[in-house]
Every structure is written in C-alpha cells, then in structure tokens.
Image (tube, rainbow, N blue to C red; front, side):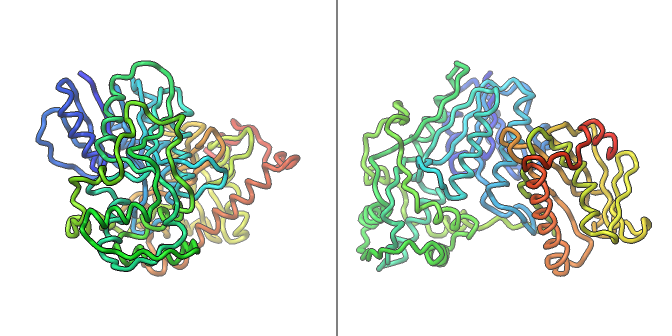
Length: 475
C-alpha cells in the first residue's frame, strides 16, 4: 500500500491530483490536508483538518509511515482577524513546519509545485517566496522534486480566472507594459501528470524541472486568443508604462479577486517567466499551442469563479504576526529567545520589568504585581532551533484563548522567524489595532536592528554568555 500525503489537497491542483491518483492507482492511501474537514466518497481517501501553522497539528495529521508527500500550498489569503507579516514569511514558516514533521517520518520523496523563476537577482517578493520554499525543501536530507510552473490553464485556476474575467468584462483594454511580458503557460492535466509520475521515482537524488505546455507568449497574446475562443471582439491598446499600482487597482476592481492574490501576482509580472529549455521535463512535451490548451475549458464560469475567489473569512478576533529577524552568526533560536526576553524591558525602562521563575516569564509594568503578559516556556516541544512559549495570562491577553509565541531558525540558519499565533487581545479590538498591535511590530523591527548590530564585526561580544548559560538563566 502506497501512502501519500497532500498538503493543499482542497486547492485547484490538489483536487485534480487526488482524482488522478485515485483513478490510476488502486493500491494507494491518500491523506489530504485542508483547513477544514471534507467528506470522502472513497475508502482510499481521508481528509484531515490541519493547521499548517501548528507543528503539533501536523504531527497529529501526518502518519509516520508516509511514502510521498506533495506540497501544493501558497499562503495568499487571510489566516486571522489581523495578519501582521508578509505572505513570504508565512510561506516560509509553513514550508518549514511541513519539513520538520516529515523529517521524523519515513518519507522517501517530497514533491513541491513551485512557480517559474526568472534567472535574475532582483525578484519580486512573490517569486522570492517561491524560491525560498524551494530552498527549504532542497536543503533537507529527504529527496525532493520541484516542478516550476507558470500560469496553469484550467477552470478554477486563480491566475487563469483573472485573465478570463478581464477579457470577458472589458470590451476595450488599455494594456500596460507588463502585458507584453513573456510567460510559458501549461494546462492542468499536464501538471497533474507530472506530479503523479513522481510516485514511481525511487532514486535518492533531487531534481528541479520547468513545466511548459506550449511555446512562450505574452499576456496580451493570451488575452487575444482567449477572446477569440469566447467569440468576443476586444480592442487592446498598448501603453509603454508598467504602472504596477494602477494595474493592481483596476485588475482587482474588474475581476473582483482579493488583493492578497492580485497584488503579488501583478508585481511579479514585471519579470519574464519562461521555462528554461535545459530544465523542461521531457515527459511533458510541448506539443500544443495556447489555443489548443484552452479547448474545452469553460471560459466564463462567472458565478462559480466569483465563489472560488472569495477570501477566507476569519470570525474569531485573533492575531497572527510573523516577523523575520537576522540570526547572528553562530547563534541559535534558543539564544535569540533568551536575548529577546532580556532585551525587551530595556527599551521600556524603567516602566517594564521582567520576572523569570523556571519556565514562567512575566512582563510587568512598574510593579511586579501588574502582569501585562505571561508566557510559559514549553521545554518538551522546544529545541535549540525552535523555541515555543504559550501565552498563559496577563492583562493584555484574553483569557478565553491561549496563543503562542515561537522563535524558529529558517533557511539554513540565515534568519529567525518570530511568530505569534492565535493570540486574542484583551483590549477592545479597535483600540488594540491602533496601540498594542502597532507597538508589537515596532518593537520587533527595533529588535531586528539590535540583532544586526550584534552581528557586525567586533560587536558580538555584547551578551556573550554561552548558549547553555543563556538557557539556564531564562528557562
């Protein structure tokens, strides 16, 4: 029995992959991870509600005897009532969590569906994020296959929906310079076929492939061909400006797609994203034109498309904040955590004080009786490269829900992510938004500058306790 885990199973590609795996493989067990439970009509498929931001949730959902793990996750939607942090940092944290879980299983291969990456230094945040997730998986000891794909043509694909809605709703389109950018689209069946064949790969090497369904063409050429397939007459007027800000606004206005999706995508369109001939996967041949790729695809599923593009609504008033910090050379997440606890009161001196008793950390104002925030270190679930503390009390935290704070190393000890998950503030929501929430981000930026100074040549002697001494002092 082949056991497969699919993170992002409820997504556009994930659903198609699951259907294909069930059709082509009788002796298979699929564990599909999603934000919520889904009904299953096949005994070989089980859906598991899993919070990918929680390593504990992943440990409960992913079995130890998994054979192949598919990662089809891209974080571009809201995850809490208030999100503080870039989608790139969210993506990095999610991939790191997934990898941490797989390291303790029998996984023989990870398969990641990424995006086409131009061969240049200055990438958009969207493309840089895809590359960082690649680096996260490729840096592990588990064999990895990365498939880089551009615009995936098919009903339900977010980028393809945006393109078809623009064509459907605009008789006259002013085309800024980004519409002249070359890209290499590919059809959904070809992507699924490439993913499915990875089940039979047995060697312990790592691979990065580009996927291509046809020869490269510009976005305006795709829109012209899409208009012809729709039977619509459209006028396209080229202008020599890139205008990313204006483009984001009108694309969002016309298509109704959420800004969390539109903004990163439009920003990336300044790059030419074409498949590299030397890296194209041979078993997915380029034998079609774009017009042939879209044959048979419903191009105007207005009601269905609007439903699929609606942003995720988060009801409970919780906060997620992920901040990227530099990690001084030779230091660890454990060292950064201890330093943060000691450093924080210094910037609010003499008003803020810290009290540490065993695993309990309390931040107090003026008097130690006025506990503003109480954290409890969890040594059983902490390691040198990841430290976990739970929010257990304090006047600034609601007692109805327990959040958590973590510091974790990522990208081969290049950064530390400082993340607050599922925090419920005690302050009224609007007051919190414009006071405590802003203060937290400013504090983390100040801490990042402090870490940068410590990593400068000749300055790391500040706070020069050893790691074991630091750990004993705070925890």
